[in-house]
Length: 413
Ligand SMILES: [Cu+2]
Image 1 (tube, helix red, strand yellow):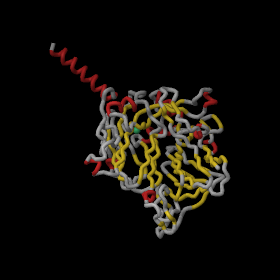
Image 2 (cartoon, protein in one colour):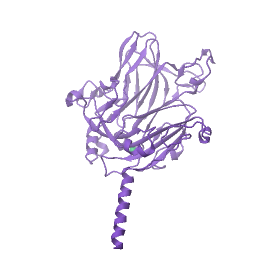
Image 3 (cartoon, helix red, strand yellow):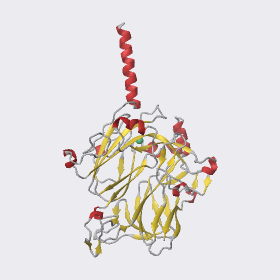
């Protein structure tokens, strides 16, 4: 009799363990100063913990799986193009801790939720691993790697070999003192070839402290006013911009994604990315400003687009990055020259302060590289211009011509 009870108890424990492993009813632990209910939102600005960290900002994301659709609708004949299975992150900031696993399961977004922070802030970024619901054979951990973060503490750098990673059902709050302004990127670093190919890639950029100067501050002859923005703390207004747009290049191999969904990952040597994208979309979806739901479970998994819009005379900062794991891309702006003011989140300045910025119509961007380029639209007639890759095979969505890495720059009168 005792043995039967023991077995029953073990079965209950096993099913409880499974519940927690798969998330049902599981709680997550978010660290965020001034957050009183664990949803990753600061709600008590008088909380002593918040007062000790008055520049705190918080964000809560999940790592798991999901689906996105490509842009080749004429090939597939449907309203949305070919569907790809993916691994990815989802934004759960503001979601009560008991609901995070439910909300985050199969909710991966591509690109990952953007992280936009101000220099001087302290970022508390909580990652919860919700598991891969479509790949129950996988118990992979995930991490966040802030690519380009200077002097990273190993514990928060996301390299699983020298650090810690987040296992299914677990949460970890990464802590960053936000310093150098510029264009960065982030991705999961666990089995990076696979998890990055599968889509765990996002935009991350830091806005310069110079934006916050007092109205009327004289910057070496350039007068700062409230609302003025700069790519860098240039000291002279030379990186001033009116509007900024992230332009992140990436690519995916549909055969690899299909094989992953079928639990038969391909050898990395066979990777052949044939969908090339800007902010997670091939042209013409790149200029579609709607948020897009996938055809598998209806989750809005492609929230970003890559349409660049400005008024004539404005200065437009393009925050260009490449997180493809297989391809270098040349990005061309044939009609409006780009002034490159920063590379790899560093302003182009000589050690003596010499201005090393340069004008060009194209930048060559390798995986993990970023460029800050300003379009000056002063002498540009209102109209529609193009931004595209000169790797001409990537002006396609897999086998469909006229797609891939291309978007439009619309200059309004
Ligand atoms: Cu991962």
